[in-house]
Image 1 (tube, rainbow, N blue to C red):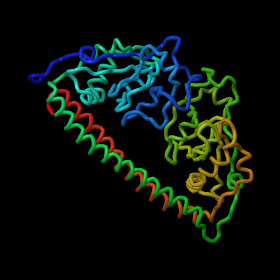
Image 2: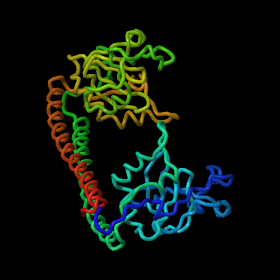
Image 3: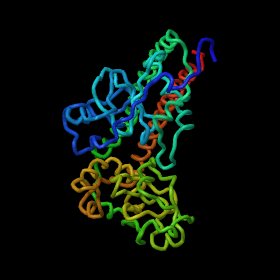
Length: 399
């Protein structure tokens, strides 16, 4: 360890305070639209507390609480659920915390900002892994936090390190905003061109239903109840679900589940090239099967007639109509569309030769969009790694 630094624990340099978990705990029924802030894990952000979406409790209930009341510059740390999430309360001097949080109150000789940097570091992440309990929902106790090890330089050195990191992190944050904006712009450019193709139609375009351009049009099958019967799964037949369709990029190449022979017997094997449309959960998501596979009745399958429609054209077409289809699915507790949605819904189709020409242009633009997205994602990943590297250097005495 660097000369002048000491190895200590959070318990030696901080006070900890849990929320009041007794009879006066302010449940949802007593929370109000205004009053004293009542802070939960959802209010913790990278920039501090989300005051715009804060919960509140009446002052009378606040006064009844025996502990878990914040002070200016406290740090809040999540002990379960979003384990390890944290934020400074900043200048907020009054409020109470939910039972999933703990107050960390730095004492001399540690700077509040230095401690916030520590909580972002891989060293702190390693401490969380070492001390957490539970498998299904990992959690920590405030007592466990007191045992977290932290290298502590003298106060002037802490301030120097924080100054360097603050300046570097501000630059990283700006670079990330620009990269994320470029990432969004690349996708928006493709979607704008996609929508223009299907709104600025030329001569010879005819409106047809999906059934009119298909050799097979229908819902997937999963007849067996209960659906989670173990004997249905674990075989050789791909079973594509709505999440797999949502996560695909034009063509489905991966799946998270398979059917056995028993599963296939109560379902249906659709051919490679089938266009899948989700009609429940993630509605109006579309992608093309890249293999023979099954899917449930929450998915519609379309096998285009090659004399009427190009497979890729139809999928791009449905992408452009996604917002329209999602709008049609609103109005129930859980948004959904069904076969009836498509009975009267007509879509524009030019001659097949022109469809192929449109697809070639969209494929080219999609490829360029993906190239740009890949560049910006790599840049975002590199910025995250740079931040980790700077924190590692800071807490190993090499900054």
